Image 1 (cartoon, rainbow, N blue to C red):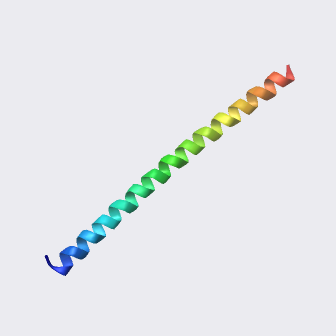
Image 2: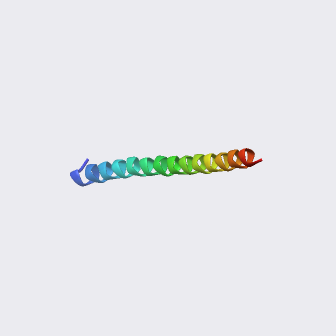
Image 3: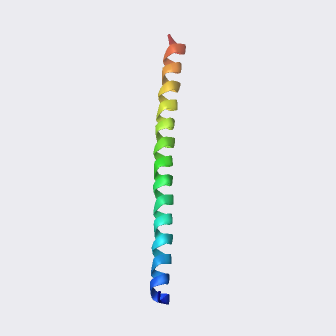
Length: 52
């Protein structure tokens, strides 16, 4: 194997790991956003119940 091929394979491996990390981060942000929406809706429902 030439040094050029090894360096290309190493770069490909690093890029694959970075892409996986980004996908996990985006998925986590989606979950956090959904949890925030749920908490806001629950707080609104509690305010309505308290007002009645």
